[in-house]
Length: 468
Ligand code: 6PG
Image (tube, rainbow, N blue to C red; front, top):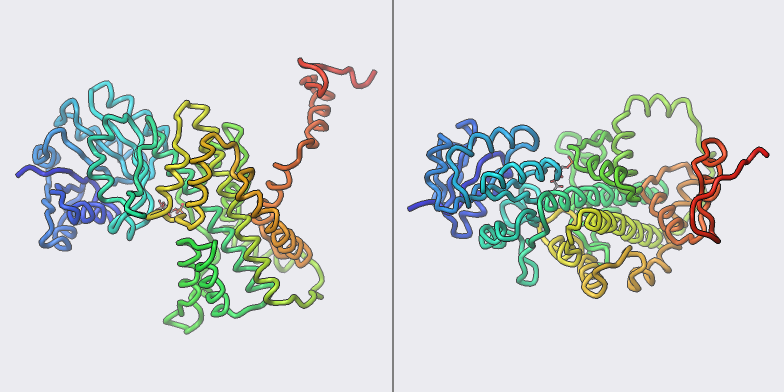
């Protein structure tokens, strides 16, 4: 019997996707550049419909036509190499899918190249980490709609399901699926940093023990902050180090890594004039964290406020932090969804913002209760410019800005840095300012460079001879 789908790239993510497909009734052919990973998967998959192949040609010829081949290969040139190795054995109508974190512009290029040969190409954003890949990730496919239709029965089956709906939807043309995944990761960076800052306030300023902070996160996870990242943070804080018996968090070196998708999100925003300051601030927070030795040195040299901090009422401030975190998250998601909207308009992608919010409800790393609300908002207002002006969030932030302002001010006064919380507040205050100070910038530009300015009371561009 011919196989219904092929998977290339059998690292943890690829193996788990193959196992997921097999468990949903697919006959899965698998291939890896090196034999060892293929053999490991075969050992793990006893009883499952997984057939190993050790030559690309055999692998391809084992597939039903139109062939569907899913790549879970390291992003970058390895994807191009695998595609080149497949092309001689493929026919028009076959479909290659890239499920890795490829840059969306690379995906668009590959799409164009393969389209000329009649081969369909889907750039598929996949979120959910190793467990999601195995049990049901969130899936963001981009490419031609008719090509997507060929793969949709498999993709929707292996995706996470929420309220009987698959967390998989057609995103749009070319690289749009990978674009949506990229910005998902930008939001993920901001969300993670905001949570880290909430933890910092509770730990450093309220001086709460780690176990109590775990309880607070757990209780927040029963309310409107309910989300995967809050849930795992509670679990992380409960974990003890086997060597020392200390909370494991206290022996983890404070140097954050990153693989590049958050950076790509910021670069794309900067290239296209999209204000995503919170997301970018979370990236810079990781960069600054990496300068550990410099920070240790600076700690000995640079001073902060005197240590005469006033006592803070615990319960009141825990709730201030909760409000601050919620509002920070709303602002970060507002930026991410603005990036979707502005880029969608730029490329005429017609991104389905409502569906994007809904497929983020399950499987993915940023899955959160309030994505239900975001989905409902875009259902009613598909062209909404910014989530902050949706009545639901306008009402929420009317209240919660008080908590955010208190936490950020307390951070400033006590010398504890809250890069994303303060950036969220700055974004909120800037966004709601109808008359900004950019008139000064324009005047300065015109003064030293004759760059011209527009007037508030007339159309056109003007130049003033400032020194006359
Ligand atoms: C996901 C994640 C995943 C991401 C890792 C690493 O949605 O499953 O976003 O795709 O690559 O979390 O990201 P960083 O190493 O850049 O933090």
